[in-house]
Length: 232
Image (cartoon, rainbow, N blue to C red; front, top):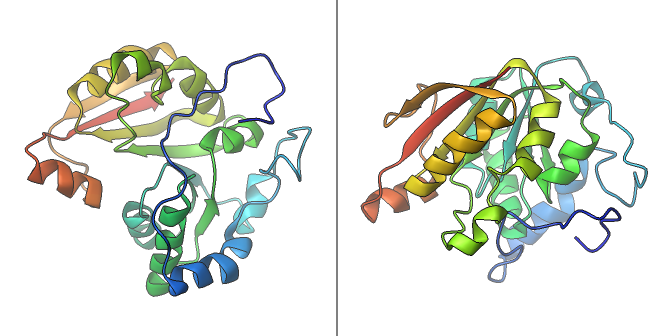
């Protein structure tokens, strides 16, 4: 990010932020719906001093808040919001086409317990108060398969330490991936950041919804793994 002011190198853990030309309906979702769903105080222009935001203000009450890091097309995010209406879920996704897809799904499902940050999850984690997130999801993150790019993966200290800071003690952190080396790195790095491995499985969680990324992985013969960690 060009506006990062400290000396830490800011490596993106995601790929492109724009794809093919969006449909007129998707452009309308962005224009009409996104503003009301964005959590206030996350953007650097509106909060340059990076003051902590009030998570209760996002949903209007003190309900538990969950976080999905990189929601892709939003299938899992909307599914979880519908299944757990008493929880507020914040999704962060820099790929604007994915944001537009999510907004269409939110309209169709009529869920009201979602907030959407159309950008880097690190911007959100910078301003979330400590111990404010009750559950977090990382589903099929960008694998950065080349060895020289492994430091760009989310499961590195630059990303995991800020995540651990905002999660409550005992909070669950789920990772789904079809990349064996990503599993290896997660098993090494996530515990070092302040989490304990609760479960590693080839079977998904009971409330899991298969995403289009998972369906593609299965078609191409890759084997998904599901990791569950708990914040110490």
